[in-house]
Length: 417
Ligand SMILES: *[C@@H]1O[C@H](CO)[C@@H](O)[C@H](O)[C@H]1NC(C)=O
Ligand SMILES: *[C@@H]1O[C@H](CO)[C@@H](O)[C@H](O)[C@H]1NC(C)=O
Ligand SMILES: *[C@@H]1O[C@H](CO)[C@@H](O)[C@H](O)[C@H]1NC(C)=O
Ligand SMILES: *[C@@H]1O[C@H](CO)[C@@H](O)[C@H](O)[C@H]1NC(C)=O
Ligand SMILES: *[C@@H]1O[C@H](CO)[C@@H](O)[C@H](O)[C@H]1NC(C)=O
Ligand SMILES: *[C@@H]1O[C@H](CO)[C@@H](O)[C@H](O)[C@H]1NC(C)=O
Ligand SMILES: *[C@@H]1O[C@H](CO)[C@@H](O)[C@H](O)[C@H]1NC(C)=O
Figure 1: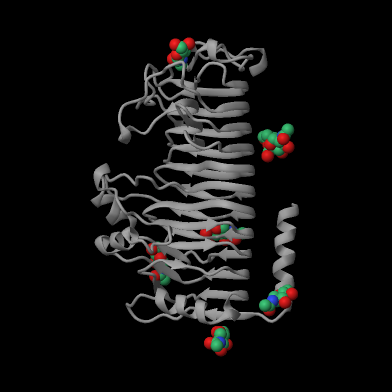
Figure 2: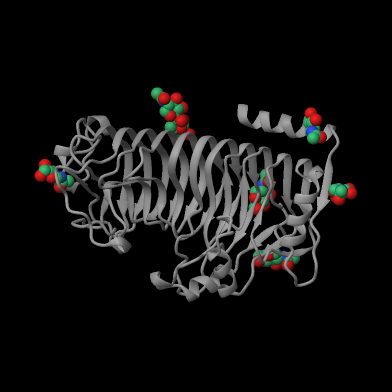
């Protein structure tokens, strides 16, 4: 693969030149962020051709966020463990302050940046103490000032590999405006061991160009992938997602003309999730989504394998907007859902008004806003053994979508076989 070879060449060439390895200092139970931040800002030899090493055998305390400087040819290597503060109120006051950089670990700009974790099962874990937060914040009104995890903004060429997140509080990885980054073999375990739900633990929130995600392993309570855009040429493949909300594109904005195009999501196992493939945009959205494929998706007890809605709204901000002919929506062009196999969990309902909870596909569309939608090679059964259903309004689609477009049983058409 072209991208892989490029990254490999860059890092091996760099090793031949003068290279600095900086071992992040650790001091007892104190916060290790200030000394690291001070060294990075005072010593320019650490921001180019350097390795910043959290060494094996040490459990670092990053009790305050770290905003990395602009790096060129830098490896951030996490071989030791890292823990966040365990005190919620102190962390919330940091997140609320105007100097909070937006993520606990934030990267902005720079070129050839590699962030790598450890292959040793006992080390390289980043422990955010999420369980405490989930237990304290089951009510939506209490969910304030939670720190997002890793933010990559405007990175050009990079690799993020083998990171292991243990109980991240919320929003694990976010990418905006990045180009040419390979994100692989990362582990996210937002697993709750009480009855508390790990809200908003999105795994990958994505905007950018030429990004490849693969072999990632995710247990969480929100989107496994959320492509918010602007985004083009994104591949997300060969991965496992358990417990969350699905492989999503959206929520395209009501106010700005965001474009998401050329997306391939292939060979992903979705287990115990609410959705498999999902597209959502707000009523009144003005963006567009084009050439998006979800293929080779294995479903294990997924409540709603394929869901497109242009009527998404945030329940926290009031009632669902009423439909009026003056409202616009995003435009959808060439969405392909191919080879979805497995089981639909029809014991819990899928939350869509008017549904039976046994649907494999729901297309909830405005009229005249979409073209070339196709669901083919779909082979699913419900856990209860009852018939697989669909919801689709034929006045909103302009082609053979691969199944009979009605509110009724799933019946593949010529295009769907
Ligand atoms: C970093 O390494 C590159 C490639 O080996 C070299 O061309 C460049 O001059 C180095 N930069 C600095 C600031 O040392
Ligand atoms: C910069 O960091 C390197 C690597 O730790 C060290 O060798 C060097 O002395 C430091 N320079 C200054 C000015 O602190
Ligand atoms: C991928 O991640 C797993 C879990 O951390 C680790 O055991 C394995 O060694 C990693 N594989 C590679 C090729 O780095
Ligand atoms: C590193 O953190 C993980 C996750 O919290 C933990 O299971 C592991 O025991 C820690 N390793 C050591 C050596 O303390
Ligand atoms: C559609 O997207 C895929 C995946 O990114 C890409 O390989 C293909 O070239 C795109 N097709 C067009 C017509 O742009
Ligand atoms: C789906 O999987 C098949 C078999 O591995 C593969 O040939 C095909 O390319 C995949 N589909 C896409 C769109 O990548
Ligand atoms: C929205 O309203 C328009 C105009 O009354 C109507 O034609 C259309 O069917 C409605 N769409 C939905 C999805 O209810």
